[in-house]
Length: 320
Ligand code: RIB
Ligand code: CA
Image (cartoon, rainbow, N blue to C red; front, side):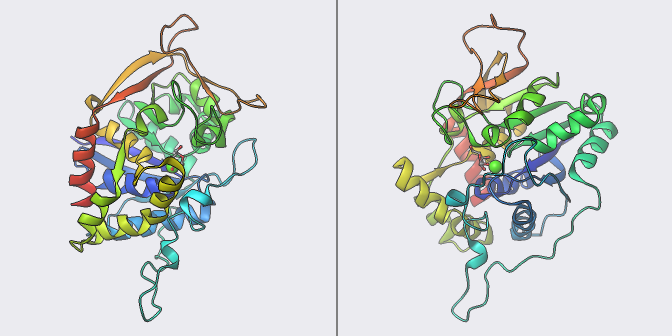
């Protein structure tokens, strides 16, 4: 029986690759995809979800719902420099020799139900079975917890792409983007009592996609590999310029992969909290992975990755 998941995403480039991996993993049944602001404004996120689903052959059908268009407290802060003005590597600007858009605006089928209501309804409908894979800021998740903590308590677990524990941040020396974008939401999730798994930069920076592998598969002409090449071109250029690597990190796809196979990673129990008020440290995930001396664990934190096994899964399911 496939595991029931909802993917909550701020569909940027690596989010799109996570959507493809989730939809092509038979171990998962994607009940819904919920959009949240983060990498890009919510309207772009919703369009990007539909463009990505349209690339899958046959176009994958799943419920898509709009969520929160701003963080709980902090100001909006997008990542256009990394994910492009459209949030999807600027593929919406790509055109053929005749000027015809290669990725035209898709027909969007958006649920009349708000993402927060949809998450609560599905958690209640499938008690103990539903995993929420959150690969954007945790605004939708926190709103659902605030609205009905009991129903959210029916979730099997929340797998969070977020945080930086024994490594530096990516939006500040200590903070990772998803947590930093809405630290108040992240702390609400940490206090919820729901089983949590953090998939932090400590392991996602080992989840590397080599540009040469992308090109090798794109040359075979498949729609998925071509889309991966098109939407990652800018993202790879950012990594070349700023990280000195010829490829890109697959932050969000790794969170999906953990939902498929927990044995890909090593996890340790820890008490995780989030700095919400520090001048220098806002958005920092605060935990001591060496011991539980600072409080009862509220999460499992991924600390190591089977790099080859993940790379094989991603190549087989997304690129081939
Ligand atoms: O820090 C990486 C995370 O921030 C990923 O989810 C990426 O999509 C951005 O949202
Ligand atoms: Ca994301």
